[in-house]
Amino acid sequence: MRLMATYDFMETMRNTNQWLGATAQAVGSYPGVAMMPNPAFQWLRAWGEVTERAFERMVVKPDWGIGSVVGEDGRDHLVDIVTEVERPFGNLIHFKVQSRKQMKRRVLVVSPMSGHYATLARSTVISLLPDCDVYVTDWHNARDIPLSDGKFDIEDYTLYLVDFMKHLGPNTHVIAICQPAPLALAATAYLAEEDPKAQPRSLTLIGGPIDPDATPTEVTDFGNRVTMGQLEHSMIQRVGYKYKGVGRKVYPGLLQLSSFIAMNIDRHATAFADQIHRAAKGESSDHDRHNKFYDEYLAVMDMTAEFYLSTVERIFKGLEIAKNEFTVAGKKVDIGKITDVAVKTVEGEDDDISAPGQCVAALALCTGLPDSKKAHHLEPGAGHYGIFAGKSWRTNIRPLVLDFIDQNSGPRVVGGKDSRGSRNAGEGDNDAPFKGGAVPV
Image 1 (tube, rainbow, N blue to C red):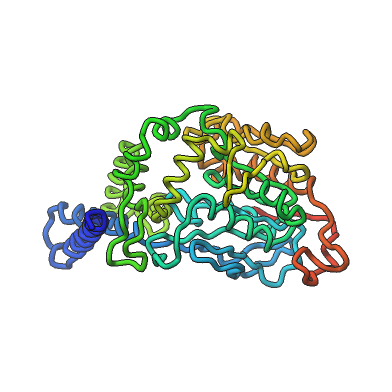
Image 2 (image 1 turned 90 degrees about the vertical axis):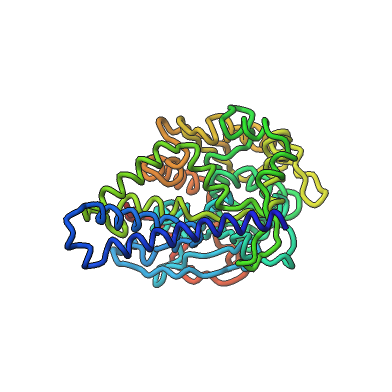
């Protein structure tokens, strides 16, 4: 009950700050106030506007905001987001582009479950849509999942990926971003033994902690320094009465957000002070650079306690993936069993979360894979976010990943059917040379 009270206290404080911001904005916006020449009221309104928006965004799941994409025919094609597989802790969604022929490349983007929603990979999805048929793992906020739906740890996460890969079939190319990289590798190895025909064609791992000890960072140091008992005592709370997951043990999004901000407190304080100044001068807008970034950054989600704790204990402390000792449902997963899935790793030279050396360790683990099916790219001057959503991704990494996919694409059609047993919608176009498409900026 104490932990539930703590969760509700944090939500109460967030709600109170949102109300204070809205009140300040309303008071500072009264016409009567404008008759007073004191600029304090302008600053009050501006402070309220920025504060209310910031605290309101913390409990709102962002929209994907992808309405259309330009095809190679030069026309805008509407995009529908369709749920392919629905599960309690996460769905497989499909960005279905209307009136477009079947694409040669089918890509599964495995989004991270590390405090933010899958929409954190929006830029990645937008950049891939013109050239690929894109699917994404859309993880749910643990606060909204009833206790009756059971637990969800890293083994469950891995089995979700296995099921999603099976659903999409063997002509799929998987791109795992950051946190899920080791589990995507494990899921592929699991399929290599259990259902080899369902393995993806290629696996691209971007900035993931395959071997966290290869190059220590502040994140890995924290994981090694703190005991599991300390983590559970200080980080885990029970969801309060406001949400469907009441009573579920979670690592709260608001607590995670405080850690994110604390890492760069001076930078965030300056950004908000500057935004208040712009709002007071009437220079801010609903989708300006500040709001566009912080609408996503501040939108955090709760993780189940068992997922967070098992990630720290088994991936960072126990190094089960790095040592090839990971087990799923009591069965050891041997990464060396991957023999025909091309694997590419991508790292950023200035990545301070998953530093260079952590992700490329995956290639050494793939002992059964020939060197011709292994690739690595180190992006000069790129940070963590840049290697999957920033300028480095758009200008350098994305083209390399698409080339890697093309080099490792097998025949899509077997016996007139696709990998899921259904006729291809545009089978006449499936083997046509790919001509590419425009990349939205």
